Length: 77
Image (cartoon, rainbow, N blue to C red):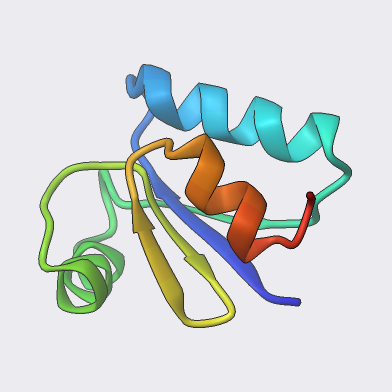
């Protein structure tokens, strides 16, 4: 399973999402888009959004910290 989270350093929802991953033993790759223009462009291309977090679970894009959508995409329930 591939999980990527696009974040910034001051995003409270990013922190909540990462905490959620830790509690559920989900391995993820964090990509901070604050100073990485290429990563920011990739995130916008995938999601159509400028806001973070954008979470990519095996190609399924979840915008924001949407716990029910994450649980479903990660098959946690």
